[in-house]
Length: 277
Ligand SMILES: Nc1ncnc2c1ncn2[C@@H]1O[C@H](COP(=O)(O)OP(=O)(O)OP(=O)(O)O)[C@@H](O)[C@H]1O
Image 1 (cartoon, rainbow, N blue to C red):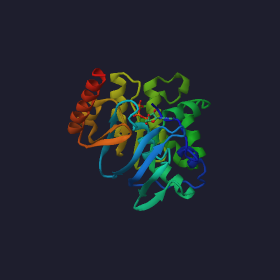
Image 2: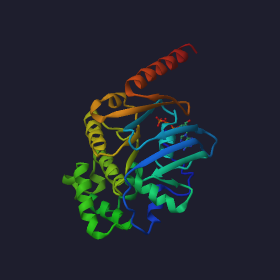
Image 3: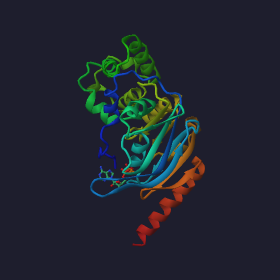
């Protein structure tokens, strides 16, 4: 299930709006969860207290698991979309500790950790005349100086293969391009790390491959959730580490090959217990 419970005081996008100063792009982000867990307001456990380190030089990290395993909840905490309801998530940005609970740190975290948010793009960019206009308005609202905006938009459109559709309205974009636009928006602040919840959700094989290629080619480490085990095994995407989640816990942390074997066994045991009921 996709998490919509915005228990945190403000979303990462909101916190960027509150920043008057233009942030200098970060070079490195390390994330450390210390007993960080999340319980929804109705009492559902999204993620049990978890200790986890994501290093800036640790390469791309995938999170897999069955429906309801806790992937979205975990990735939203990693991506600073939600504060944990227990424990803490520390962000070490260019060597300096930053904390979501400190107002002054929020824009710094939001700039350094680019969260790919398809729903935000769908709901907040509708009034723009074109895709280019949407990016320009977004950067303007975030105090990026006019001289920088055109160049940055050009780079983002090229990086995410959107140059040809720069004049199109969002309503006319297909699913693949919406995903690409959400990635471009996540990269607007030149983040040091990208975080995405199912970046290829709902796409066919060709569109998925195109989106994955653009995402992993951007040159920043990506932490993401997926149901696509073929994607994590694809050497082109250089996924170095895979976390397997089950029942709100991380139950495996290792390389793609061993993670896939573990996950296959997990599914098999779930089938067996289901059919013996
Ligand atoms: N907004 C919410 N309110 C209440 N409970 C929620 C909410 N979002 C998720 N949950 C619950 O938290 C647990 C973890 O859900 P989560 O969405 O993180 O799993 P997931 O692995 O991402 O699932 P999926 O693959 O279906 O997206 C589940 O039991 C789910 O029902």
